[in-house]
Image (tube, rainbow, N blue to C red; front, side, top):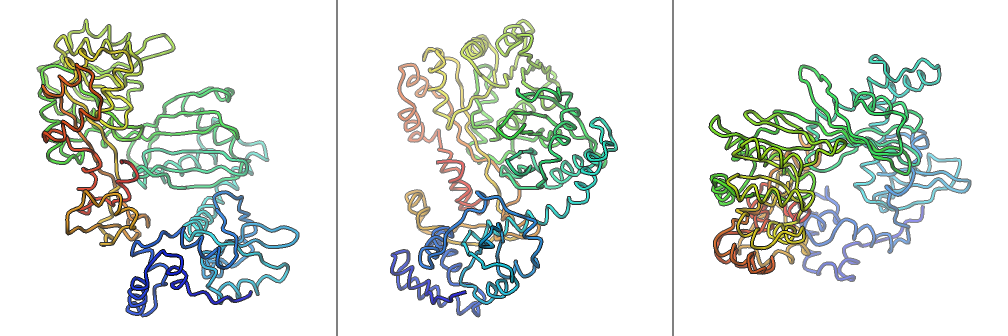
Length: 555
């Protein structure tokens, strides 16, 4: 290959990404590391440029096309013809072969020696180089390892299908072994969901760990139908119905523990997408103090729970931990002295001392219908899984006005927006003012792995966004990645939240229909409200999470 002399530091100075002084500082750090660190990586670690910006700049200078490896079909058979050690040394992925070239993506096009060694091993055709993100290259190597691990099971499945000995309802079939392997892997990594997603050329299995999806398995399309049919049989779903969404439930014993799974299917362009929610009874019944709320918010929430009547909303998007917070709150106030009734869809966990009702839309037993009937059951505390329509909201509000403490959820981005949403659902402002006692908005952020945590300086663009909220002296942290956190830098999750407690002043502002910005500003000025973003910054400054995590979920 043609070697080009590229002084990446000088180019970054010329392009205005860094100053000459910052370049000299980076060169000094490189020398101190005995040149074990690349100059570009030092500049990235110092928050002066993003990895993608650096890669795209290199691509422009070297006149090499940048490629997104997630947007192309990778020929793993072609990869199998190369020595993996040689590919890893060159950080190279041969992703395609055509009549003219073998197309190879590399992370560092300046790694001339390793790339030339790879080129010399290819005698049949010339090479066309592309540049890709190092993280994407690493992901493809990880996918290759996943494929090799599951190769034996998949071979057995294909053999059963080809010979006609495959039976979808068999407990001993290879496909059942594969499902058990998928489930065991997800549980081992403390995943909350398993996603099985078909594409035009393969089937991907991903698990949601700490709120972020990770790829676990990749299969050929020819085992997809067998896999989906067996899962649908487990969940008592109609295997012949592929045009409509279906919901089901099943249990599976893994080692000495039994796990419940909530199953959902949805028709997509390439087949049915399957999602299995893993339900673990031990994870849901947390104490309020274990949720991760800041001390001030925990005190506000505790005061709300001591109210004799009124309505409390827990808000946030799907997967933000609303159900966990609801159950923790109910678990805190449950007592032999009061009657607690919940209305859920579906009932995910069993709550002691509570009467739990499952709604059934097929027979028109909705949240509103169930709520009407349970008011005759003389409850003290009511939990409505979700307010989906104005009828349910009106009945819940009326219940709170007649001496009941009502808990429910809404999908809003912040706590003050719950007031706006209630008005949009045709509830009069004076009714909101009389019934609402508080709104909790929350998100889940990943915790930095304690085993590989180190101090670092975030990107300049990030610091510019938050500089007005930072003290004079501040420190931020991140996880470098280690075996204990699967090299993600994160381990576990915690909550960031904001609680809008309805005071007399707030109630008056709601009754005269003032907007959410005025309400939140007044509450913040009076010290009764701390925005979720500031709650997240406080956690980042203490090293519990990273500032990137806070920005990922809040603004």
